[in-house]
Image 1 (cartoon, helix red, strand yellow):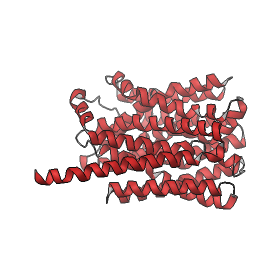
Image 2 (image 1 turned 90 degrees about the horizontal axis):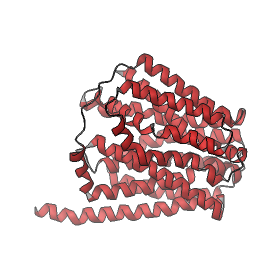
Image 3 (image 1 turned 135 degrees about the vertical axis):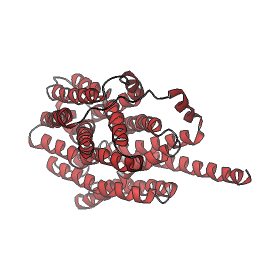
Image 4 (image 1 turned 30 degrees about the vertical axis):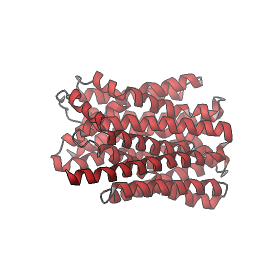
Length: 387
């Protein structure tokens, strides 16, 4: 049982490193292909956009296929696409190599998390899912900084080769160690779609979208900011990404701890703290030592945003957990696209130093949605008491 969970976590580690590994090497890719940094940012945002638009449809397409074979196919395609990316002769070829695996990205996530939940008794499913999800956390801590480090030591091609090797290892481990996975019964999609009638779901989706957009409008260009504003070198940037990820592990644990006490209060504290962090990034971004401290607190606050956003959305429709999780996946990746696109436009129009203000504006909008949610909740409470 644990073997199954760890194999799935390894697969998540591979595809997460592929998706977000470009964050640390955007400056090298921009220089290598002679494109602007905002155009290079599409290597991240286009990947996320494909997931957001096609995720549910891809799951419908593969619903009748053998689960183990589908998971293996996803990892194989990720490995091949990274090899193509490493030898891309032009930016357009690189962008296509990035887009192709994105279609199957949500397939692995959905099947992997569902398999984890179904492989243990119901009361143990959250713990099982957290083990698989740990693959994403580990990718943030080690995968992304390692990909950046490889590009600094060798070249940007080495970063993609590393991702290809990780996915190949995951592919081999899955074929060898993962037991057969039964194909589940077809979901009653029509019945599940009733959750879209819930206004609170739409409010929480909007809140999650704005929060994650705020996170990625600056974080997506973290390496560029550290290089141009803080004047850090490649190896130093790799260490900063590692520090960011390590702090993020603690931040994710803290977010989970306080979410169990009060979701809305935890969300409010997150929005306020992340806004303060970005304001300080603007004022201290050009100072080397203070920026190291800021990167730690940035990672500590930032990483909890995924869990906070997920809990807000999934708590809106507890009666359809798998379906609402798939909706959140699309919402989250759409938010990554919006955030990285807005951040790229800010760099083009106002310069890289101004980019933290894009996050601050989006967080202010998030705060507005959260307040609207609480006002709505307060206005409905008397009605429930009367009933």
